[in-house]
Amino acid sequence: MENINPTQTKSWKKLSDHFKAVEKLQMKDLFKKEENRGSEFSIQWEDFYLDYSKNRITTETKSLLLELVKECKLDKAIESYFGGEAINQTEGRPVLHTALRAKENKTVNVEGENVLPEVQEVKAKIKAFSNEVIDGSRKGYTGKKFTDVVNIGIGGSDLGPVMVTESLQYYQNHLKVHYISNVDGDHVHQAIQDLNPETTLFIIVSKSFTTQETLSNSTTIRSWFMKTAPEEAVSKHFVAVSSNVEKVEEFGIASENIFPMWDWVGGRFSLWSAVGLSISLAVGYSNFDAMLQGAQKMDEHFKNSDYSENIPVQLALISIWYNNFCNAESEAVIPYSQYLHRLPAYLQQAIMESNGKSVDRNGDKVDYQTGTIIWGEPGTNSQHAFFQLIHQGTKLIPADFIGFKHPLFQDKDHHDKLMANYFAQTEALLQGKTEGEVRSELEGKSLSTEEIEKLLPFKVFDGNKPTNSILIEKLTPESLGKLVAMYEHKIFVQGVIWNIFSYDQWGVELGKQLASKILAEIENNSVENHDSSTKNMLKFFLK
Ligand code: F6P
Image (cartoon, rainbow, N blue to C red):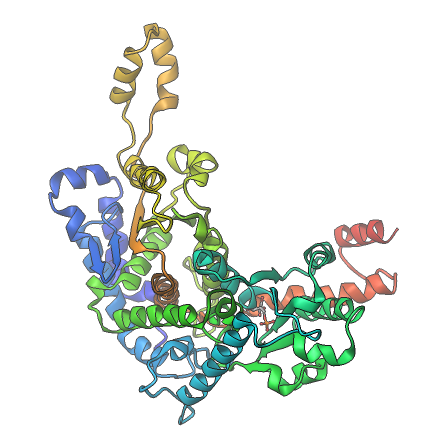
């Protein structure tokens, strides 16, 4: 990958000038002028329909952004990404979550060796294990079938699996899957109190197997388990997913109970690996595999489509436009499906841990904005919570609206209402409501002229608020796989253009180091040298 400062490219300068020229444009005027805007700024691919016409962009914006992509050499970067080059340079690793869903007959080399046979081997292990637990042939230590599965992990070892399990709840079998991530003991004890140790399977998921939260939670849970179960029962009830086999064995888990993963799978992109074991248990291996196949299709679309018709590329470019030229501070993700309620949280890690960087690939401090702040909640709930600010607040918040054409329970009445809101909100955000419109609406009510004039400014909507609409046929394992891979590639494109390393996460280390130092002080009841704020609080805590 080449290290190109995007702000030094010709297209960046052109985009800055172009911004001044289009800054005042109103999207609704563009719609009036451009009859085919809706179709020209949209992409239809398989069961996906992306409409990005409700954005503050013109045909020229689009072509300048495409020039930027060329100048930043996205082509070459994509080759390096899929080809297994060590593009995570600060950790010296390739970034190959795409290999986890690659077709079996392909070759993906890491240091000259094809990794796909090993990937297939682990998939076969996931499949066999999931089938046995689901059909009840694998039993707990007293001979009872498993009823509950607990995933113990944090960050990428939790957020991906929990998001997918929730999203695919409709496809779930009889197993109840629980997630324990926080080191908060109250949560751990609350979560285990209703579990039956005889029928519960625990999956300890930690790529490094050094994560404080996961190891503490696992130790507490194992002690709780052993209050009623004999030592030899552990091997029937505890399995682990990790790339650190030695540490897992030290913890007391036998090698046959370890599902391996590899250095070249980043934590936040690992749900496609054995980290997704809880997904496979919850919905069955065939659904897990269908999700992988969906992601694989999105990989092909991303690799092979012309950038002007490329969903992840277009989304990445629009986001760069707002972040770097229009000064937007954040982006909202609003799924119109309750099933996707953990998607924003999952994307927060995927996007912010990846692109929240302020040093470029040359090691220099950047003087432009990088990683976007991501937040969101499902519609329609969010409409009754924070949409006020999106409609009438002072901040520019581009939003992705994700919706499905068909509901899963065939309740047409509910789905029509849900989707009417989906369509209405993006239209309302686009059109707004003018003073004239508000006035004539108020005139229809029995209000005096004075009352009308007083109320009027509060009821005006400026409109011109940008949205992308991602409309998908139906929420299935396959379409979910496509959706998640779409965001993964959006992250990649943005990292390439911002000239940052998207696949390390050094920013999480300092807090961890200080926490272990402070923990020792708390345990020894001796507060050492800190700023007066921290010192006072520690003293108050220890009193
Ligand atoms: O928060 C930092 C982080 O390293 C994440 O990147 C990762 O997903 C998480 O911790 C958990 O790490 P592990 O799987 O090694 O326990």
